[in-house]
Image 1 (tube, rainbow, N blue to C red):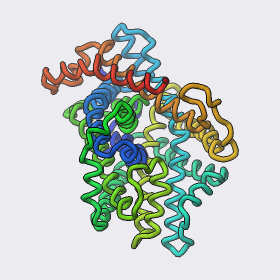
Image 2: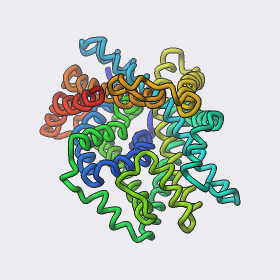
Image 3: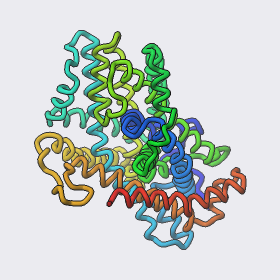
Image 4: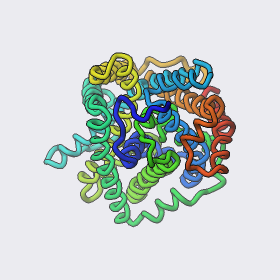
Length: 460
């Protein structure tokens, strides 16, 4: 008999699930990674391919993750163990849960370091707003931050404590309360920044850069970058959406509808971030076609220093970035916390969250040190695709480029081939039969093949 509730609590409404899942999806991938990938991959050409990847690969796997979670009502590991046993499938499918949890902890380890950067910049602009010294040379300020292990460690710890505090309180008191405030705040800040973009007089040019595709720029590299971004930004393959699905009520809530709402929210934030950033980049003579990762922490602060009310704008922008990072980091910690809570008892949820956050924080120290004291510690240059990477880059490559696509591939195969068709149909009872057949075909064939291409590309 299907369990109707999770021992960890339940989302109080469809909106709360959408806000929480969108909060997981909306993060640095939207506001930091998407703009610079767009700038480096031909603008509108990249956006067009990215949207196609969201629709064809991202959405089907997102539906599958949420569906599996709602069916199992437990942490990913125990959900997959239970479902494999009930459906006569191999116990090896449990590895999806372990893979997702390990990937989440690894990603959180360096994500918290980058999240600390956003807190640091937010604090700098707060001080400047109240009469402190201006940021000055943004490039020098950023290099100074990266070169200071104590300061990086401090902000890394503050960010991890913020994340742990929310997760330790549970679904209703922690996750719901956080996203109820943070997600509206994120949208208000983002819309204000887009509004400012209109005052620069370059919004039309920025929109053309984002939405007018140059089909000659579409290549295999653009496709692979877009596929990777679609996967990363929807939080797929790290067991988060499976965990959040376990807290999703069944009565009156359609999985396709709520997952489409999450995908649309996530994509809208990415596009709005582009409309907030590129008008500023263009107005101040910066190059939108070659920003790279430094676009946010080097180029934009340079523009803020030169514009009217730049301090206020900088504070709003990095505050937005910090909120986006926070809502995503919460979701990275939740699956592992849910598993330890099930294994050792509900009363130990706070301890479970603290232990896991501590572990991730310690692993994150490797990333901190790789930016300064251990900067020379790198993989030998002749070692295939990982040659020359420092510790932080290596952890990011293993988690983002290998473990997440592999997790998504296995989720699609499990839902498409190992899970009983009746279970799929029961969870998607409101979906018209032709659409259900198309979804199952995408999970069985299309999504796995395309994700496999990304995986192969990552290792050759």
